[in-house]
Length: 95
Image (cartoon, rainbow, N blue to C red; front, side, top):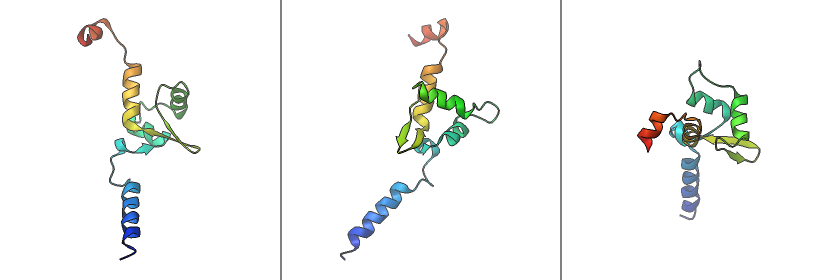
């Protein structure tokens, strides 16, 4: 009985770390995987472009020690808001 706390903790830890069943949009991913998820192969920008967007603070990212990770949903939203070309008809429809 005294090990039940440890077993429960280990199970909870495994559930948190289990990314196999988590959809890619809910995971933190590296730069290569982010580009694979967001763009098809013919229109995929380079990793240099991604680093430039990161440096310009266009897209959000997380630093985990020396690792850089991205949330796919946050990046998708940021790119849509930042790179949307607003024409007169778009402005009329929005506002």
